[in-house]
Amino acid sequence: MDILYHSGTLFIVIGVLFFLSGTVGLIRFPDIYTRLHALTKADNVGLGCVVCGLALQSGSWVLTVKLLLIWLLVLIASSASCHLIASSAMQKNIKPWTRP
Amino acid sequence: MPNDNCLSTSHTLATLVRRSLPRFAIFSLLWYALAGSDALSWVIGVPAVLLATSLSLSLASSSRLNIRVAGLLHFIPFFLYQSFRGGIDVMHRALSFRQCLDPGLVAYTTLLPEGSARIFFVNTISLLPGTLSAELRGDQVTIHTLDQGLPVWANIQRLEYHVAALMGETGEGRENL
Image (cartoon, rainbow over all chains, first blue to last red; front, side, top):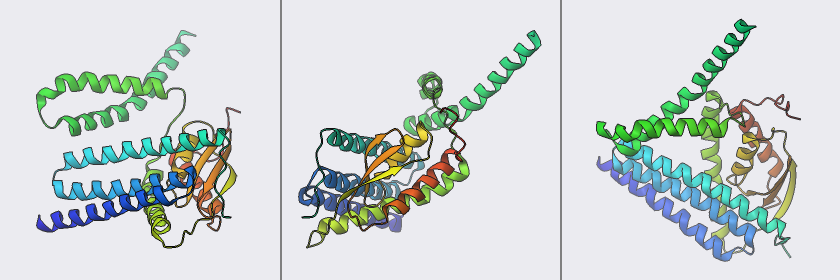
């Protein structure tokens, strides 16, 4: 029980680090497309790690299924909205930033 | 003639049962996970599960979706590993002292048939390391990449292969054309 709890904590800390780096990318990256990269990828992995950590700590499979379901729904929503934002930016002729 | 008719109705009934049973099982499991083991919750659960099954059937009738179990077993570890690599890649680029970005657009023509397979493919592109699906027009996908030095084409082709195996598409699924 104790080792499950502590490995869960480790997973949550790793997930928070992913969220943090995604946010840093959102601030530092130069244009809408690169910022979308930062948000979708880092946050999906971050949420995955947090969900794994919480599932390890919960100790019940019903809660684990619920958590996995939340992750799956967020994955679908974030990849679909990411594609929609990028494609509407393309339609508005927003040129991607390129290395000068 | 009536005999023929009877045969076809029994055939459609069999396909209906075959298509609805897995959905029914999945939705029941979902309800159990959401509502817990309280038996009384099935008073609402059974109608909800039946409604969800019929809704899912009527929504999916336009596009065929036949997920292969073997394909799924290959796809899940591939997907988890790739999205983890994608997260590490973004973390590295966001936190590195010098900004190491060389973004660009890449055009790709997909062989996947129109419908759920192509939509699924376009949505999963955004979770691979360094790629993001920016636009879909017919079978033309415009991909934005964080780094033009990455092997974008090879990565996308591998993903396309995995999606084709998952959806049971082997290239002959172009009967709609």
